[in-house]
Amino acid sequence: DEPLLAIDGLKTHFFTREGTVRAVDGVSLTVPRGKTVCVVGESGCGKSVTARSVLGLVDEPGRIIDGRIAWQPGAGEPVDLTTLDPKGERMRRIRGGEISMVFQEPMASLSPMYTIGDQLIETIRLHLPLGKEEARDRAVEQLRRVGIPRPEERLDAYSFQLSGGMCQRVMIAIALAADPALLIADEPTTALDVTTQARIIDLLRDLQAETGMSVLFITHDLGVVAEIADEVVVMYLGTVVERGGVDEIFHDPKHPYTNALLGSIPRMGAGAGRRLATIRGNVPHPSDRPAGCPFHPRCDAAIGGVCDVSDPPHIVFGEARSVRCVLHDDGAAVGGDFRVDGE
Ligand code: SF4
Ligand code: MG
Image 1: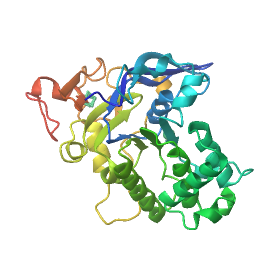
Image 2 (image 1 turned 90 degrees about the horizontal axis):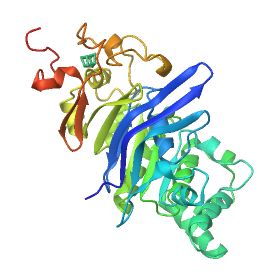
Image 3 (image 1 turned 90 degrees about the vertical axis):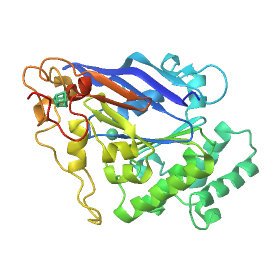
Image 4 (image 1 turned 180 degrees about the horizontal axis):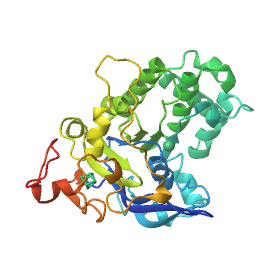
């Protein structure tokens, strides 16, 4: 089965006066049909830029300079989204119709000038051939699906009259209005309190199961990954350092960065503070990427004269399982143990 979305060697760079920022620098990942893929990493690792590249939403002075984004919602040849005009008709139809996106700040995504109903109905009519009344009925139905009580009344509400959690439900209703094959969710719960976060995650999981859509979920929160992911993509400084099934990532992490992230999750039941704790050192700015393995200045397993000099090899274990680290070359030190034979 061909994947729904296949990103291959994507490079999205920002050409600033201070120099080139290689925000996304050779990212490859796939989203299988009906699955949830989580992209995880610290802020600035390129996860949002990767997502925005899919939908032609890269802001100036950014540009996709290399790679393919193969989109294949049905039978037939895939479309390479990188070849479409971001402002063209085709991309406008795909965006919101076939692929939808929800963002971190639901309040900021909704206009305070129009009612919830206006915004929802507008999206519905943009993508579906429905009259005013039918679109309104569908809007009510969509609000009900995302768990908004008294949906008829809510149509006439404004975003500032709703809580953050309710606004995010409305954004999800808008995103799913045209039954997209892929939902991209960029930190959709980060701005919400912990209880609301859990409810929104549950809702997304239920909607995914109900519709069979695929989800590309971007987060820095491994607690969320554990809840929702089928597959996990770990990013660091614009590159994918490890990919695997959710159980493989949590129980058999291969990259020292993944391991450090996991080491920083507090024990179960801690409640608050499920975000990634700090790893030694800081993430360098992407315009100032270290030579060799980008993680080497922070890596406890780094090998002097190797990791600071040459690009780490990309070791592929299976279709959705790979790691970019010299420790796994030739099968040396596989597993959670970072010693290299002979060292
Ligand atoms: Fe650490 Fe070297 Fe592996 Fe990079 S390649 S993660 S520095 S051991
Ligand atoms: Mg981001």
